[in-house]
Length: 421
Ligand code: FNR
View 1 (tube, rainbow, N blue to C red):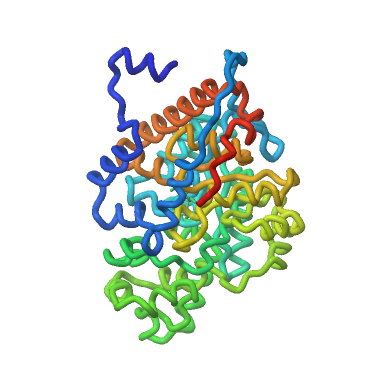
View 2: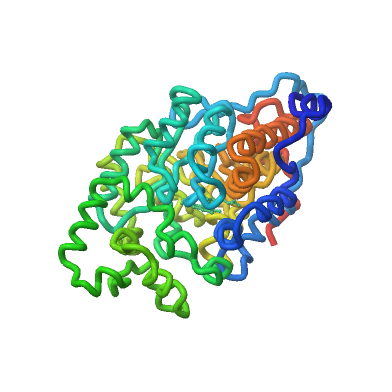
């Protein structure tokens, strides 16, 4: 009701409420290349569209005459009670949306009690963002998202830093061991990587500095300024297949040792299930595997002793033609069979979407692009308003569905005659 009261009192919203207008407003605020990086997804963007379309095929069947006067959005996760089932998905290079975007978004999350998942590709070091959250609300929940580097020393260092700055979980993103083919982004020069943006977690890391020094010590003068043939397989595929732009951008850029080292160590496409033991040994924090879509992988995750899986298509940015995240969710939930919490992202555009994913068995849902756009349009206030709107719509949808508590949502509020097509 606070949202409606604010509307009646004539206070102007900082943001368009509906997602399509929010996206348009963000597009006007950003450079073409920045918008292409955030909005763009893989290939023909079929999975990106499927992610949002999948919500349109699910229907809520509300129940009536159930007391919904006291509604409870809280959930329990990793032994902590969270006031809402929302998370801010990790988004790299938020400075493309707005200067100091990481801290602005994280402060808004802290104000709402929403955990912020700090990206491995953030524009600001995790310590800076954690301190910004502490200033808003001591103990504000934050997690760290890890891209598993080919340097184990770096993995160890990043995880230790995450623990030291109060992160409460490690989210290992498993769908980016090879970087996706993103035409909109490639057409405009692959802005973040060509400029060396989004590597603040690396450049603030002592192990990374050592790797850069080692590289400079062994490289000849030519290698110091050119992309090395050893560029990591994930980027190598793009370097190999793309007609030149990225190479040129990289060649004409600033001193490149840091960027080159980053390209070398960003990912490790050779990882297997056995490698998870290394992570387990090096952190006491809960481990979330992000990007699990196959029921068999969900079962393996249970066997591997991790603490949660996150169903995600990375917002359709990685594998075009991949199953929509929402269509994969029931299979993963059934496979896990209550042994682990299942988290969800990809395609959430409003509170009703969140209710549908929660009803299909997600414990919590993460939003991605909506908050990046809110940040571009109106900074911290924009993200705060976005979260308030999402939570208001979630609360209203819950009440209208005849369900008082998020924890009581299950598939019985969904129509069954909606087979994924
Ligand atoms: C992402 N995502 C992402 N995921 C991750 O694990 N680490 C990262 O650094 C990033 N970076 C990133 C940048 C941008 C611009 C976008 C849009 C997304 C994926 C993100 O966490 C999440 O999976 C999707 O954004 C969810 O889909 P929606 O909500 O954008 O549809």
